[in-house]
Length: 371
Image 1 (cartoon, one colour):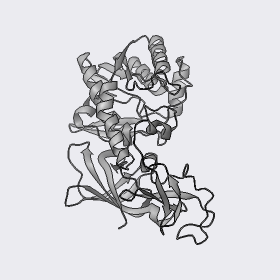
Image 2 (cartoon, one colour):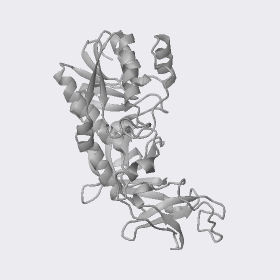
Image 3 (cartoon, one colour):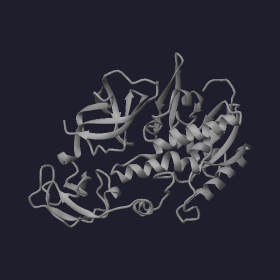
Image 4 (cartoon, helix red, strand yellow):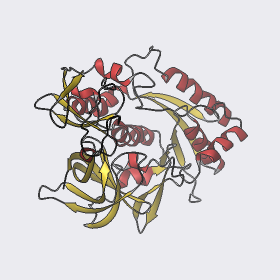
């Protein structure tokens, strides 16, 4: 952190990470204002919706820290910019990552714009990531806690957005963040981390999607075309899924390569034209392992694509960096090739490219390739 003092607007979510973010900035002498973002209104009084409690927690934090807090409603922007895209992707049989789009379109666009109207010079969030300026270029770096690094979700941020962003907890392990919160008496020091998609809360995911997506049941087949059961609609499944298939008791006595008679079943593919879900037995079945992919809807932190060559990439969050070769196809799509095949590469998810600790950007996986 540099020594210059700023007027910083902090996104206070009600969680411990953003609370400690606000504390650290105030301790460094910055003028700190808190903003609580409400991004979802449907089912607002539902048992799964924690917005009301989250705001009370955020307000309690602001009171302890002695800072102002404002409640801002971005639900309309969220529905237009994030949720509609989310539904389109699921309806097309892909598995989107709305948290990536939420960061680019809401937290670092709608929220940033609002903060600038309040006279902010910087905005800050509780993300586990870091920003470094090198020769006038802003780099997005991984958070130092490898178990909490969230650069994957921030890979669509631009130079303009990063130039205004601060991530004060990005250099800390989560254990230290909780220790600081307890030490200064924050009321949410022991609050459980939120899980899942921001607007769904802890509700069953299939139940949630069922309210918004049309669906048509169809056959579940193995790779040899044998029907093993019925799916409830292709939108409700993702590649690599093991739970909720309803075929746990089905055994394949002539198991294909990579499987065995008592191996669990996994979703390996979606045959969209025929409304068929393809499953295989065994976590390491060849149909689940792909050595290459192409991605589109590209976004690069530096404002330009990296050069072809060796790099590393993640095809899903919480995955270890995988060595790869970066290239581009004739259509300008990102083409990644991996020496070690990657498991359950899923269209709709993000492929994010790294050069060591530097997140370069990436795109949305369009297709996993067998070669």
